Image 1 (tube, rainbow, N blue to C red):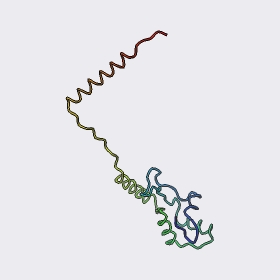
Image 2 (tube, rainbow, N blue to C red; image 1 turned 30 degrees about the horizontal axis):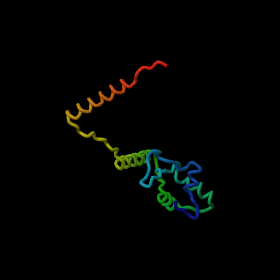
Image 3 (cartoon, one colour; image 1 turned 30 degrees about the vertical axis):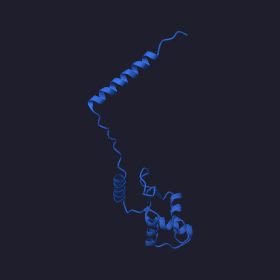
Length: 132
């Protein structure tokens, strides 16, 4: 995690619930969750400036968030668009494996069925009723 002016603002914002996960089931390539700024940028800058007594410029702060993998969006529509792109990105990365059945001939299938019937009969015959 990178620091700005010697302070870890991302952890501060997480503790004050100003940064949160977009989707708890999706993760980056490194296995880290996707985080997003949940409040307006100006509010976050004001809180961080008040906490650290440092002057923070908007572009500097946005670059800092980007370096720490925290997304910042302007409105809910942009947020939903980012969430969909992340969802689509992860789905193309991890396609579920489709199990393929090994093709077997009809002759082999019948042979296996007969073996299964014999095994079931042996099980049933070994279970004799006993009087105790």
